[in-house]
Amino acid sequence: MKKASKKSSQDDLRPEYDLSRLRGGVRGKYYREATAGTNLVLIEPELADVFPDTESVNRALRLLVDTAGAATRKSPRKKRPNKPVRTDRATRGG
Image (cartoon, rainbow, N blue to C red; front, side, top):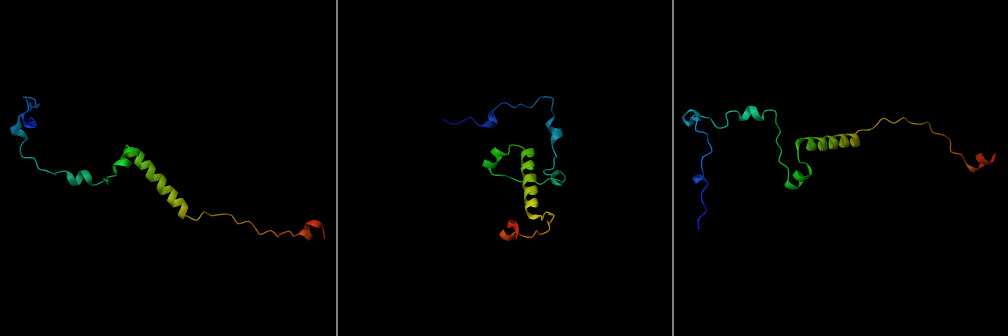
């Protein structure tokens, strides 16, 4: 038994649409403009489960950048002056 093809299903297009006016489109006409400020990255499916939306991915990446930056930066520490080490004689009084 053959499966019914999808082409034979009813057309959902409204009758008031004139298909003759839709001809002449150019494929990819706005592709460069649409991707100009975008950096699209595909992540693995198991990561997509952990990071379901753009906000969660950006938050995790910012945390990673901040952590990596903090680990590589040398934090300015105030150096304490060296104190003389007390020996047993100094603590005994003589």
